[in-house]
Amino acid sequence: MLPRDVKKALALLEADAERSIDEVAATCGVARRTLEKHFRRFVGRSPCEVRRAFLLERFRHELLRAQPKSSITEIAMQCGVHHLGRFAAAYRECYGESPSVTLRRRCATFARQETVPAVLLPTLDRPVIAVHSFELIGARAHQLTTIADEIAIELLRDRWVSVGPPRHARYHLRGKVREDGARRLRILVMLTDLAAGRHIWADRWDGELDDVFAFEQSVANRVASAVESSLRSAEIQRASNGDPAQLGAWELTMRALPRALLIQPAAQAEALELLERAMALAPQDALPIALAAWCHAQRGSHHLGPQPDAEKQAGRELALRASRLNACDPKVEALLAAAHTLAQDFEAASMHCDRALALDGGCVWGWNRSGMLHLYHGRASDAIECFQFARTLGPDDPLNFFCSIGIGSAHFEAGRYDEAARWFTRGIAEHLPAVWVNRFRAAAFALAGRREEARLSFTELTRAYPDLTISQVRRALPHTPGFCDRACEGLASLGMHP
Picture 1 (tube, rainbow, N blue to C red):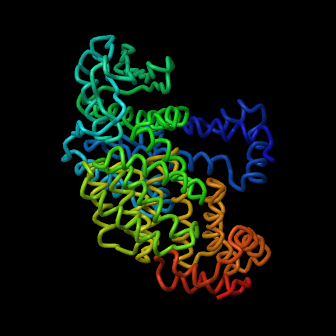
Picture 2 (picture 1 turned 45 degrees about the horizontal axis):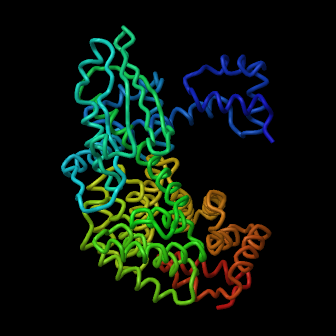
Picture 3 (picture 1 turned 90 degrees about the horizontal axis):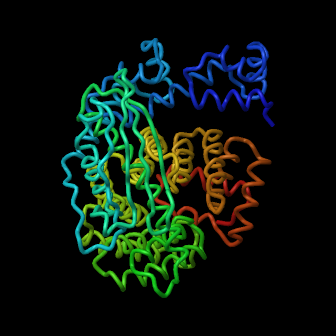
């Protein structure tokens, strides 16, 4: 239990890491020395160390969202970093690469994304959003004449939404740009579900207009990312509240989506029933087919069905079918990469991963699956980088728990068993149904010499999977031979049957 001053200080530093520690202490109503003592006792780090960690996280986040012409110095100044040399050294120590390498990779993915035309096939049933002209207040704000068009183009890259005229749209995006008279602009944006009569997302932020095109692109990227997540949640809720007998293919797919991502036997069985109906109604839509492929592959890899090999094969066959139909949807490509990976067709999986990230350099699921591919090839450092990249790009993504599990697996691959156990534990905390992670968490605890924690983890595993054997664990996922040998060694030491 954290003291009140520590909790408040952490919240203040997370919201604004540029605050001085003296200011934070005063706001918390304690002396600086008292705050430092409490931090060292309850957090294990000084307030300055925590502040630097928040600054590093913000700096990295901005690097991963940067526009092609952005400079490291400019981004550092925006984040409140004034001693770039020392900060760059801390960044390298924390993330294993220099800020310039991170920025170059971001620019490379941005360049790949720009080559993809923003086109949505009209035959696919998708929710329609209308992007209204922004209200521009002030002379500098009036330079942003195409900001609504830029947002519409970015939204069209998301194949889960269609942009159309207001009379055909359920969702309406409106915004306002106002200058403050000192070169800064404030942007306010709001997304409304007109049929439900409610706002489902709103945000505001400030910026400086040095480059009109770069500013519009930055706003468009930020808005499109937030709208995608908010609209997906709204569509899932709408489909879940509808009469199942009256749902179309899109609604059935949205109703299936949270069940599919749950990675739990009953939920995935329900998802597959819904997706079968969706595929029958829309046989040319790759999305429900790809999601069904994902479900079968996960069922075959996490002990969720009696015939794992048949499940993986079914996933691979559906993935091949969806691949022929996909209309440049990066999320579908990522789902197909997962199905092929778990069927141990790494060549096809790599192709779909590359496609996903070429279509959208910020595709969270694409980076997630790229991390898994690196992991199964034994490239632990590259895998961790991809997983961290995915977590940064989509902090609220429903598959983030897979990133934690992937990071844990990468540490296990590298023989860092304490770190592996920590990340496996985090993954389970982020997604409680993932009891199957205990097959590796228990082994990590055992190999780290933490026998009591290993026994508790093993008990959780065998309670859910009483008949699980070492042979089944070895065949479940395409880890490297060394990974499998050590995992099986740990499980054998805890009493699992061969």
